[in-house]
Length: 425
Ligand code: NAD
Picture 1 (tube, helix red, strand yellow):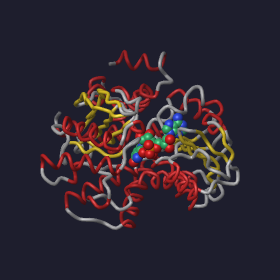
Picture 2 (picture 1 turned 135 degrees about the vertical axis):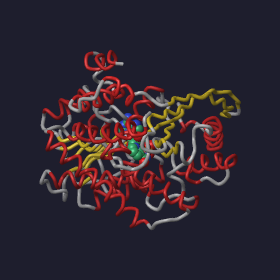
Picture 3 (picture 1 turned 90 degrees about the horizontal axis):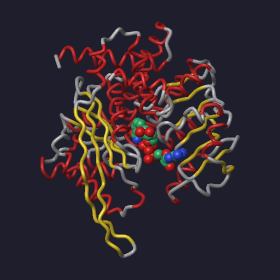
């Protein structure tokens, strides 16, 4: 185990999966944890990989494809495993393992009674028909059913998965276990979903951004904000930040980026994407490349797409005061250090995007209680939870003279360790 950690710094410092371990390593350095405590905290509780054969029908031809699905359950000392499911061609076990660990620290940091997990299928869902995607999802659930459960492991949406996918998961699981809405979160409202869940992660990102501007005595009004990724998280963060008075000067998706120094009308951009499926062709902004987007001067840069997009190669062109990690693991640890050396404040993923898992917790509580809160209550409680976590991180960072990420990890790791020891694993 220790050998792996050493290899991180020397050989793979710009790989995002290894960066996650490096951030952990750095945080626990000051905590005086033994090597065996570190091993216990780092190892996954369970890792499952399943084969999902599926017949695809394209251009009148039938072909058999075998997909691989994963679920990594990292730690459940503080409550049932919790974490998203992503459908993406790059999904692999080491990525899912790192993301599962991240979920353990995230749920502990915002102090909700869950552990950490992550899962996914290595597939490009845009190449499947809707019926094929539904069958693939249902087969994945059939194979994962023994490890899922309302008090065992509760999946949620992530990249390329949405309320419809969650509805199929709920239905497939309930066929064999009775009506169980609490087995998955991020469901449509009509199936026990939460008012405000869809926008919760993006709204939380905007809330944390506003707190950061306030702490740094920077005005959010008219501040230039650039957001990479215009899916669930990026689009709602953009919408909320614009409504708070920020100028969203740049946005992007997988097809390219848009820039307008006066600010892009986010409502129109969202409507455009709903109609056309992508930002490609959106008027009233200059088309630039995804690489160019990251180098435009701004007050806050918000990566909300894939992990590792801010790395040793892209770091030097970045021209911002603040980075808010809306995506999971968007900044590699070597890039992190260089950016910090340049005085850039980085708000870590486990804090910045935790609004989503907090809302998922509320959905699960309501499903278990057969009860529902209104949208304003959800928003207020989510912000209160984020605000506590933000204040805790800020105070520890000042007290221990460490960056926000190290402080966030230290708080989370100690909470998990205390639970592990109390339970006597
Ligand atoms: P999504 O699939 O809804 O959107 C992803 C967006 O990123 C899309 O606009 C896509 O076109 C874009 N994108 C993909 N590759 C890109 C590239 N190379 N350059 C620029 N844009 C690119 O996904 P999401 O749910 O918004 O998740 C985004 C990130 O936020 C992921 O890292 C995810 O793990 C994290 N996250 C999501 C949630 C949630 O509730 N959805 C919660 C916490 C963290």
